[in-house]
Length: 102
Image 1: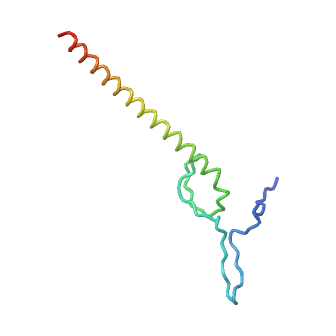
Image 2: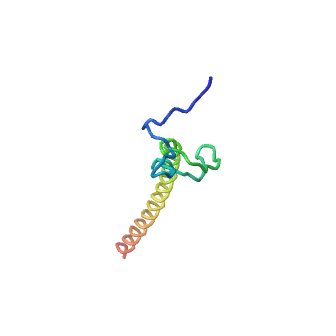
Image 3: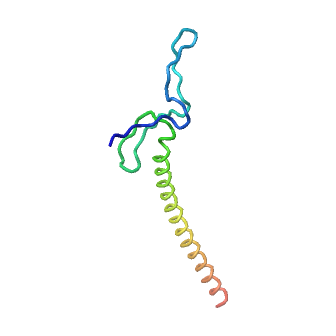
């Protein structure tokens, strides 16, 4: 089956050359965006111009991965804080016992 890319759902063209005052002028859609980095699912390099709407799924996947990483870091920090708090409370308890034992 042949697959073709449909026209913009917003009715725009990413880039279009028009005549303005007898000069050719390139009009570019404000959503025509350059992305450079790594594809989050395949880790392949990405360096291309596309419509920002086309990049949304890839960027949402990347955002979800970053959120999971942040959640792991926050949980690790929480565990260390709980450990420190427990050590502090046990020190206070021992000091109270020392004072009461005198």
